[in-house]
Image (tube, rainbow, N blue to C red):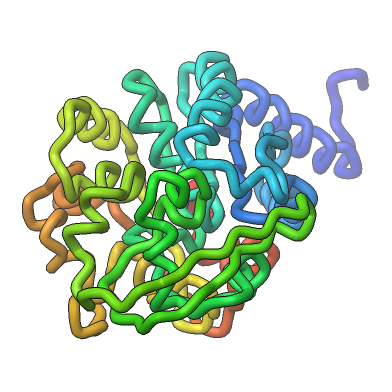
Length: 321
């Protein structure tokens, strides 16, 4: 009699068997890196989605450079996030999944570029300005309330400007007139005002000369670490690019899938960008290997990407195995 199993017990045995298999096989750890002006609290719903579809998954949303701290220069943030991510990677032989939102996507790319032995299995970039940003948004107006986008480069393309995260990926060619604008950091009671002269509308050379983060990261300029960073990028098993035309913040929205404006402000797709054609940082190679996935979803505002269940099911869930 002791060897017999009633029908009522069979479901329990099945569940227990699945649990044992999950504990043996396990899901890879997931690391979430937040975007500008937010922190771990904004990603509680995403963590819940992950644990519902992949029970027992270790999900870590890194509490570094939160909120106002997210305005620190990106290389400084990369150093901090790298030291937090490294031990999680070292704790597993099977690799990790990185989900990086908005500005966090650029931080994750910097982390992986400078971790030559990283084991990122999936790098999931959620509405990130991968090719740069050129557009007004509530984020910009909060910190730069006294000017329009066409004047921002006057500040961003300076040594001082490159100490602010947004300026590390501001990108474009614009014309402006004489004026004065002020930059206000309300929480720190800092006010900086600059006089702006009229300038040449084509600022490409100034961008390449001044950009200490985006330009070298995208291989737009040659530097001593170009080969090493490229080799590190190519260690990624799957690169997932997520974005959509109703984002409302990333401008152009195609920057989230590596597209960007030309000098006429016409969007040029990823595959026609100069740095892609030269395979400057390995994106073309990954794409030719089928490792790059684009997931474009309409109707999602920037702050809703990480709490939208449709986005999770269609663009994220399948890669967290």
